[in-house]
Length: 335
Image 1 (cartoon, one colour):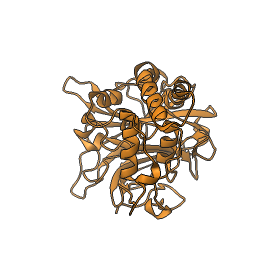
Image 2 (cartoon, one colour):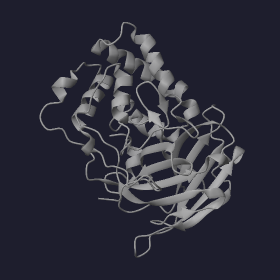
Image 3 (tube, helix red, strand yellow):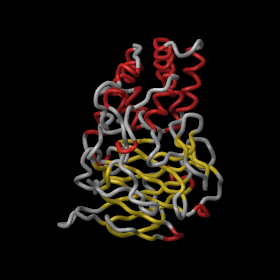
Image 4 (tube, helix red, strand yellow):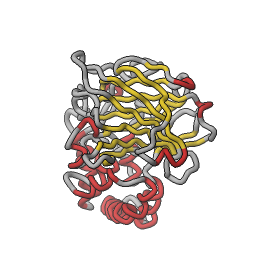
């Protein structure tokens, strides 16, 4: 999985669990997508939660712009009211800031907001594609430092673990002219209102599979990771990732310099932010990370990065759900 139900904290309410985020060039601007509520997509969005698109404009892994979506209670038809607000500068980091309303409407409808912003939220088919046997083998190599042969894993019938499942998605498209920089960093967060009147961050996501590979299963570290910020990543998680990667590539015998290679991986993943050049084609690839498109095979990229070895999924192009079409909101309808 990517970040599907990736920690005890995230599993407390799947409506606040981010499975994946994407950023790519759309038909009218830069598209940001946050998928939550994996495996079913039922139940809609949490009416006491915040769904935050955090954008860094100066390369320090600290948000300078935040778009925040909030939802009302579900009606009898299953739809929810939706409002999107924008906060810039110091307010982008302050969940108590009022922000400026950008768009308002209902789930299931395309909403045009101010300054050309487009917004849509609702159930959609999960575009993420992965082979459960492969991810299990890679997790074992990373967490236990044991080698494996990808050819031994890819035997018999291979299937997409998330075939036939849905997510709840928020799609935001912002005209390129609304940014005054050429490159941004992006990550998604969710937060839940507390009884004390503040907010508790529940989940965050940028690179796929980070928690799955490095903080697996029910570890408290997985929950802790979801509550911290990208600017802290190298200090808090760099040493652990370095140790795990060095041990894994040693076991796999894929490099003569395990420590040097592990440091390269840490520098690539952290801070955990998707970097994107405004107006360009997204490419989450083996050589270049520039945003992330909907149909890119991100697991193979992450596995190759962590193990310094190609690890195919054994799935064909029909294993993934294609985008609905080339236009907004880009996702396929729910299954």
